[in-house]
Length: 439
Image (cartoon, rainbow, N blue to C red; front, side, top):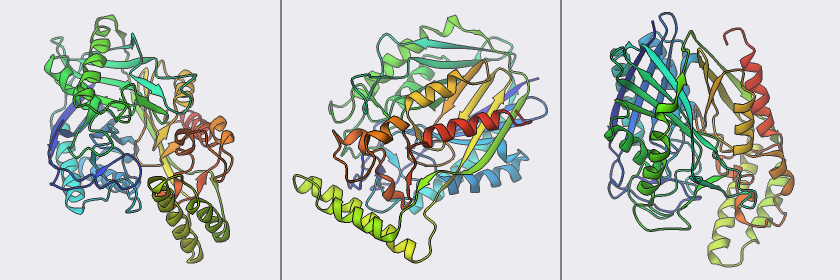
């Protein structure tokens, strides 16, 4: 016996709520809805173990909120907390849930946070109550005629996600209850950097189209390893309206053309593991942080650039003060794997680059692996060692902002910079988790 429960609730966003994304605070205050946001929940039950994925059309998840809500859901529904995952679409046009500095990517709206938490608890109960038996599942990889994304860090090599990974879960009558799809590209097609309308971007448009085409009763999108992958028509390249919907339509065409080519997926027993790890950081003294801040204050060729680097400098000076007050600027995050027979889902609490993401999938012990980033927390970017070596210090001269920005935006979370081994650290810990008895 294998059961799945699904539910969704549309998220209402208060007017003038700050929208999260596009670098430091840009006064992007919500004025309406372009593509609606949803909170969705999915339960998976093998007759003994139950797992759950809670999905929101937001830019990130938050470590504190994931742990808090996981504990509440576990108590209410008697689901083991290690089997509960939180993930996000990674749209850059939804409210902030992550805790960052006020001058960063959007201030959290306390009214929305309280409402979102309550919505999560409602939707997980509905999904639990909605459980019904699934007779079969099939999976596949839809090839792309041309990439949805471009590599913003290394455009010459342009390594992108080569396929759309998917699973269809079917009832006994052949109808599809759930279509899960997984691909890697930032949600930055809609609205432009100063857009002021809520949008679930190309991923939300794709979800809506898949449902309208009756591909399944419920749709679950998992964001792949897109830390260095923009959409092909990124906001800074094309600002006309409707780009996200056009990308969504193209994406849906690739996905639906492959749905009849799937292979049977053995669902089998559900297992899961979740562990908290201290991530490797480059520790600095208050004096070193203030020296870096002084360098940034003198950086920039015009007022706009000087304003940007000045805000970064201010965050570094605040970090120095926090250290002097005895604060710990290290960071820990949760890594999680949920397995369902031949399928495995790797939940990464930030934006992993595409190449280590592909390595994680290629070296998986599962026959059908999937990766879900921006899950269970917001650790920002997990860059490759090669990228870290290209820009070894904050005072080096970057060739361009992308590549440098992902490594040196840590001050907005008031934590130390990651060591260059951060991506391999995550992959090694995932391999360790795979070897635990529960897996």
